[in-house]
Image (cartoon, rainbow over all chains, first blue to last red; front, side, top):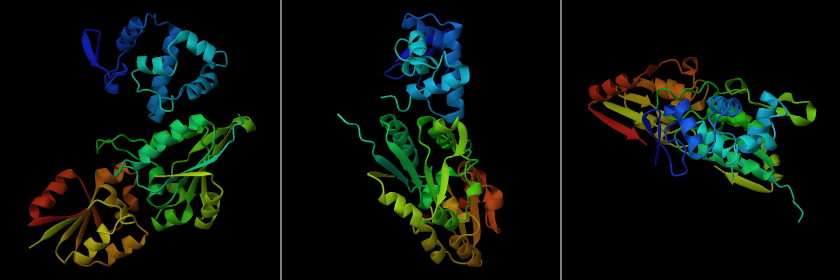
Length: 110
Length: 136
Length: 101
């Protein structure tokens, strides 16, 4: 599988996650969101960037409950809950947001 | 149905990069953490090498997964028992290991050390108390 | 006839290093790499055996030390830290390579 963005082709796995993490660029997230009928707002980007920073630091994509807790601590309580995160990412803040962020499927997401 | 919390122990006895065991163990621990059990990790024999600080795999073309141990606290895995004798036999001390910490929810998020240095005899007692033991 | 012996297993898990030390003759070279680098750390029973071995040149692969977080000051005095290029040179300089896997 592959996704076209910014005039380039990006290889993805069978679930739509980027094969090569290093290739990611914002246009990939925009394109993936379009395919999911979503328009990315600043609120989406805040979570996507947060995930990329988490991966940079710990080398894993966090499970959704870990993400929720970490967002609450870093970005404020009103954002660190599943209602807020699912409203932004209806297919799951772990799975969908990690995919947009160019990360692998979250470790510990079952 | 009553949910009974069991004591799960993951024993790590292998060096990090020569075989896949160390990384596999870490992944299983992170996935298993979703089940809300009482999880502990033990590092003995060559397993103590997994926690050495300053690992840098940039010249050997392998993923450096040592930063992931610091995420264990986020997954509520806060008990990492390191066997003292194994460290000493290998010319290492606690100072050579990553200063892993977790934030204690029950103590106003105070930052606490995850690594607990124990003797072989103490670790044997801890293993005795476990319900389930996974070996890597 | 000179031989380059290579060890890539941890001396605390496998007997490769011990057998290598028992077989390596004066004038030969021993290169530790991958998990074999753990045999180069000071202050262990393995290090004592390395120090006691006369007439053998010991080398350890730097990138594998670095990957495993073992700083150069922890390496036994007398073991030379080498890069990949030197590994190749050693293999070429010796008549044969014996791998203790």
